[in-house]
Image (cartoon, rainbow, N blue to C red):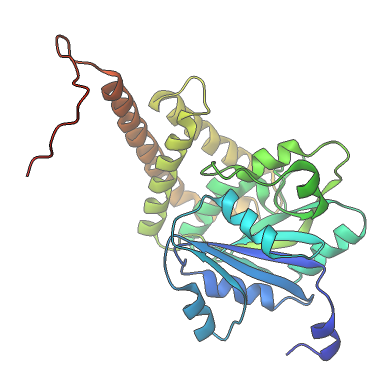
Length: 315
């Protein structure tokens, strides 16, 4: 239990836990934040259904919950959390992740040292699972604690609150990559640092079938997002990009020191091929479906003139 001085302290860091459809990991995610050594201002933003308040209350976790029955894209959920909090620094945690011990303290050390934005690393919550290791390698090899500096990706950021006043908030119409778009707006005056001690553990699929399903779904999502952003676009190009990405992941991890590198690669190797094929399968199938849908929407039967009056429904 926190002592009276900690309980009375005004939190410097707000943590917004983002949940879609009351995700199974929500209770674990919130518990990991409340267990940090620093006092935090915590709010949960859930959309798309479920009973997050009931589940959190049953687990003895009394935190504010913003619940929207309609599904929100991540940017809209982030913005609701920003509006509902007041701490000078703002961090986000997805409900399929847990904050490792020291996550908040490491962030605050970097912010107090002058960083306006602090990026963190991603670890594997199930390091003994081959499925989880394969997912970790394919999805986040450039965000591991030992990621090489020349290839490292800076995500899982916390921000000084004034940045949202200066550069605006997150776009609410993007299905993903809303943080990438926002980070691109930050000017050179923004001091962004990477702290490998700021770690979140991702709850990757820990069973082969769950891994294949997750990769298939991710492939379908990438096809949907890529349609409006990639040139050229289509199943051939997106599939080729997936294979190039997997090859780059293996090449990168081979160069990373233990335990993030060769040990992870050896453990994950048997499932890398099936996982990649599942991703490409979902990507190609969704790309073809979208291209067919586009073709049909623009096709017009010859010799037939559309009526301007709506037809009565068939009963």
